[in-house]
Length: 380
Image 1: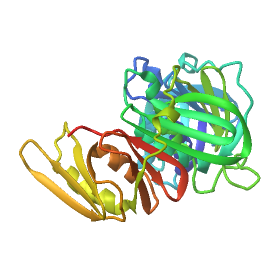
Image 2 (image 1 turned 135 degrees about the horizontal axis):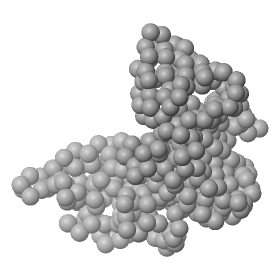
Image 3 (image 1 turned 45 degrees about the vertical axis):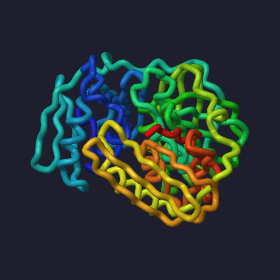
Image 4 (image 1 turned 30 degrees about the vertical axis):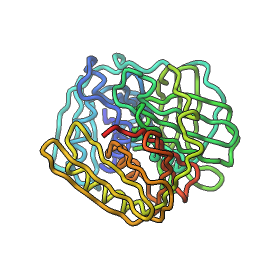
């Protein structure tokens, strides 16, 4: 049976849209595979890692009739990538093998039975659906994702807090040392939701969401921009966008009260060029040690000094002219935390608000009021 027959770029695009979550090494070998379910001319592709499941449907021709099989997602993707994009490729099923043919190239792949593929049990109690522009959600995630914890024992930090209420959508990430918050006001009224999306889900959404205003049919709002539809249940979220259905488990636990962390009344404010500050910090970071990423920042009227040193007694010093008339003091930071936020902003200017040498700094964006970044000082 011919499972599919279509241009390489069409087949590869469908596979890549679901392939990002596939783990190469898994206790269940079948989870390295993609499930293909053929119903007439339509082919459904499904991948899962037991926590997340992504499904898409593509018109990839082939023989009429129903058929289901699983095959190695990475191998199939690598083979497709190696073939010309305009070449017609076919996938033919024969007993327990699949043969991929393109031009004079032919590959025979092992399969595993479709009935062994563990589909995610979807929750029965999803709440009301609401849609937001893909571009907005991608922008919000892009502003905070770098502050998520990685493998923290406080598992609720290994993801982002997603808060929807009324026409306000807020995402927050923290690893306990720094916190990033981004907020957008939308034209839609959203049911109140407060959930923690897992780290892997966040990174996969960021990869798949469109920010260029071009979406597939059926995913667009009235304005013609691509939308993402969301629904939440007690322990699951379901996203539908761009021909994909994305189901993920949620992280259980209580996210820290981010409003208490964000400083309100800092009296010293400096607005300066983002790229200039980032370049100075990158130079100073060269002479920090691998374990100890500290830089000293010396604020004085009209001037900002940046200095770093390491165990070999090497030293870097930078000086920037700034428009500042506040208190003079020296404060230490993990340079990586400062570089992360500056590298993930696109605007020209950045505002740093400080109280004294022992208080957290607040970094904001003069061009985007919805963004706040808090970083704790470091003793140096």
